[in-house]
Length: 114
Image (cartoon, rainbow, N blue to C red; front, top):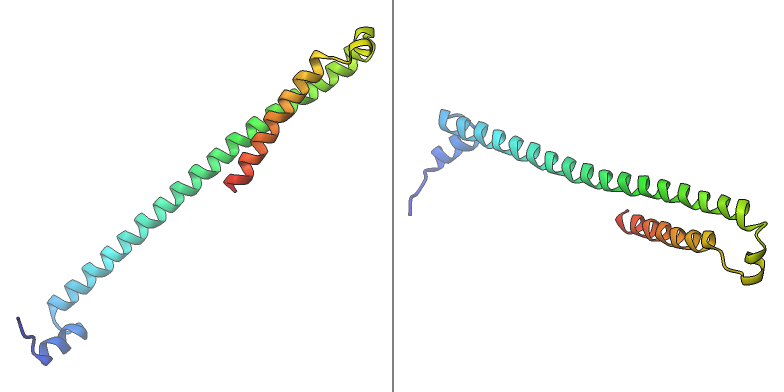
């Protein structure tokens, strides 16, 4: 075991020697580099999450437009169609329900992400 004299230890801790100054400077430099790398990876993670959320919101906006279109088609065509009143079935309502379910799944996925 190597024994360090109290004088050398005191000089090292108080940065009186060149060696202690170099070790301190290199240590601070490495700490700064680690902080920059950590910040960079946090930025990448947040950027990736925001990108996924933006894509989901864009898909949701598209689905809402499709839902509105199906609703308008139903009101325009099937509201005056006598076969709808006889059967109660409408292609536009079926599409409306499917697209509404897709939009709900996107919303629940967004809630899980946030």
